[in-house]
Image (tube, rainbow, N blue to C red; front, side, top):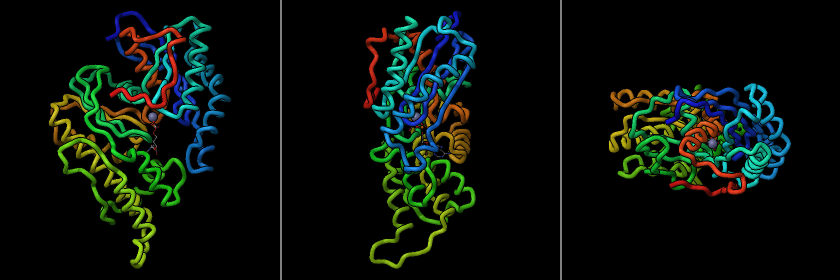
Length: 347
Ligand code: KG4
Ligand code: ZN
């Protein structure tokens, strides 16, 4: 995809509660992350049990310039050496997106550089390939984050078709909501995963919604409601004491069974030569292990990719990586034409 010349991308990501900037070099040999700075607002949002958009945006305003400066410094990069800027333009929280987009527009104007608006979900997929560029197509990506759960079919690099998505909660959202039920700290995903290590996955019977359907859409609200009834009791019936670690493990396994089952079936149906995992929930150790094992067992001729942990949850290296692909396709714009779009869906 890239010709011999070196492209250097400055990536900026502020779609939710991470202020991030990265410098990525792209050449024929692949992508090299020179700097990947992520300033997480987790401690701030833990106090409210979730992201308050106004608070997140205010924090992005305070930190965006120092974070960009730190990324440039770590990469020993000058503005002159940057070929283009890539910024998350959507989907995400409007107030958060705006901070990153306006910072990128300002720098593009001052430095006279082209600007590339990047779709956040496409960024997650590019993040899965940062260290593993040797994808064979057609490829199937399972994108699981706090806001999205999607199965994307890629006929070739950068060309996506959504073949399944969640009809209600995203996988990460379900983790976060069940964590709240169990009085675990925000964000819920890592907290559930840690607690689940001490629990039994078959201790509670939870549904596997739509696993046996022929389509590839997901639904996680039913698993969450079943967990709610276990914790709060079913109205009119005697309440049982629950073991939190067992519920965490049973819940996590129910979500993984659905994700793995549908991904394997879709990969088989569409003849995928590669399967990749992406998004914040891709940091889940059990999901990583079980999806990899399932692909290796059920589809021995299919390659499996998953991002390093640093490229699972929101970061700007993945945005710069997608920006590099788009830059090579000449999909960049003057700064005046780039705007935040909180509802940007590509498919
Ligand atoms: O991709 P991401 O950083 O932000 C969005 O684009 O939404 O994903 C955040 C989501 C949160 O719901 C968080 O609970 C979940 O990813 N998450 C995990 C783990 N680490 C983060 N879920 C399960 N297990 C984990 N280890
Ligand atoms: Zn994300």
